[in-house]
Image 1 (cartoon, rainbow, N blue to C red):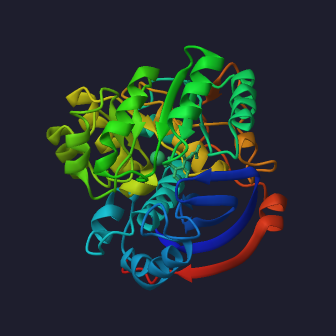
Image 2: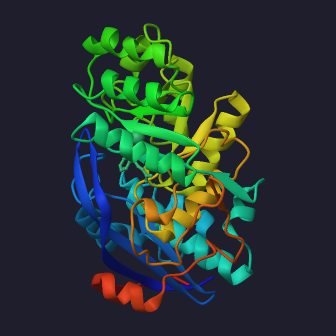
Length: 369
Ligand code: OSB
Ligand code: MG
């Protein structure tokens, strides 16, 4: 495959409702889409970096900068997606930017071969169960309304975002109202080691897991916390590679892992992490980053691998977007169908994409071949 260059496109997508987490409130996504133009086919990737470096050190303007300044030039001479991680390895971090470039090349390559990403990754299912991530609300009645609405739609698992001051009471209220639904919480690093006793109060609610209670660098703190709290700890932010996953599992810091392809540097690394976890008996689930249909399609493919035994933050397009840039993913019976077409199986709808686009930049590749 000869790569001619990459189009970097920014897309502004309003959310159906504000999404509040312990690190901020989002009302729209400023998405960086990457289109790889090759002699095989064009391919699409989505960069999941947020507008601000609040979830991870990456942010969307920084991702675009590192792509154009360092990453894309380093891809000159790369002939297929397998070679991307090696070519970009000298550059530290910036995994979300790297993941988007690799995803675009992988999509192009697979489209050229008329093979689906799901097949390529090792999919074993034709549909995946849908979980939903529910933001922090102003009041418990408002939260109960939102959760009730999602359960009526068919979501099979509820994740509540928590932070100090919004934890035990909302979890108790949801448990009391909705009975034994699959329920878990995500703190996005909002607690400290001193909160161990407080977090242990969540044990009585039979949660599937507590996601990333402490700072992302405090892996040891999670291991200590796991000896106080009975509910399984699941790391998100702390896990940036298969190597960090292995270390966290061995330390006893995490019993379950949230795999987000952007956070770990791409779908191929995500598969590697999955393979390790499957072998080690560590359940995994597919995280979400409020993706458009481009990233969502690829996440659904990943979530259909055999080790993804827990429902992911894999929701319908309508959970976040009134209008998606691809044909919307619609939930049926609490599940989404795994795309079967070439590559990620979906493409942007040109008129909608153009309407939501805020800038486009073409970066040609000076190929060494
Ligand atoms: O921690 O899982 C997270 C969204 C943005 C940043 C971080 C997280 C989230 C979610 C999202 O919880 C969910 C989704 O895309 O469904
Ligand atoms: Mg999380």
